[in-house]
Image (tube, rainbow over all chains, first blue to last red; front, top):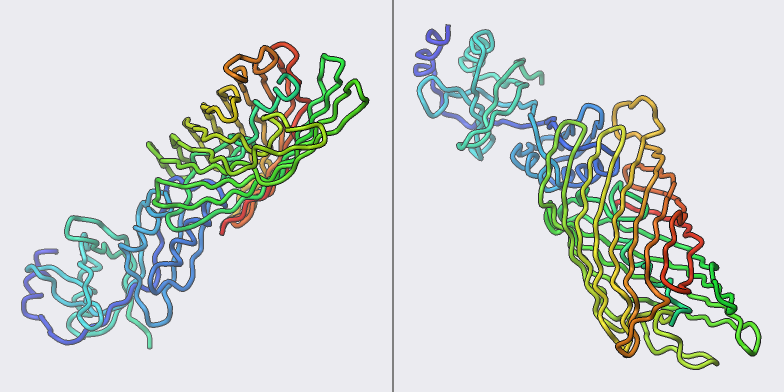
Length: 168
Length: 296
């Protein structure tokens, strides 16, 4: 199925300003085992640009950040904030809005950020999700994706697990 | 010099600790980069075990202000500012006398570096060596009606003293175990040198409440049991060792600790269970500790 949708992307390339916003992120924090330490993480995360609210869950071993209205959170900064607090960041799940565009390589998809300030490559896309992404790509419809960030030398990429149309 | 030999069982090394930590010594838990923690600790120490006819009674009240700053995620700097009140009562040929001094003591600056850490969900192990220096900021030439106060009763030592060691911490959501080994090298000033001090400290903290954790950052109530093994060398005055100073003391220190995300309030008592002191060195009865830490 993957082979079917990839060639279609070549035909459907669009070039227009495309917003993308990371509006929520949940990062696993290894090593966090008391509330006093948890607050150190909360303080660091509140210093990340565009973060409005931080919720720490000690039992789940997670920190959740929510962006200010209309702002986007830099996922690399979230990870760095956990490290600066003296802990080890684990998996990072995000909720991101944007428009699906073709990626830099044939068959790739990505969400591009507003004013061309960046993009988020979509990787490890399940067939079902891929087909829906193509629909949004064709219609130039803003979407919300939820999934886990995958890290590589090229930077963060998103493995989307859930997709839905942005309701305005 | 035997009169004040108990002071060798230091107050200063024991106050350097932050984060969710033991009550009587340090921890290896981190201080976030660019963030600070403030600690206010009060200690009351009393020593009455005097085998001589002087029937000495030493009381020390110490208020320590500790500021901690995370320079990086691994390096934390500590500044410890002690305010001391020392009172010694003793029987002389002219009756019972009291000698008393109060004011700023010697300030300690200390750095702690996380050399190793192993983080897992809900648990961590860390090892952090530390190195510190105690600056002679306290007055060391106070006098009273009986003349100049003996060096150990002065507010400051007059010397630059070095402290170093290492602390290891295992922490889970249910319990925490800390152990620290430390050594303090005391230098000479005013022809007097306090004996060096070595410590081995162990602390076990068990979460008593809540029994079942809920989501978020719930408050913890820890029951704490600590042990402090302290060895002190003989003091030296005029180049001669004081036979009535130094020795070994083992303390058991039960305590309680309430930990929230911004605040820790704790209380403990150090009870000497072994006192093997040299000669007529004054024996401590115990130390009461009450302190508060604020996550700034």
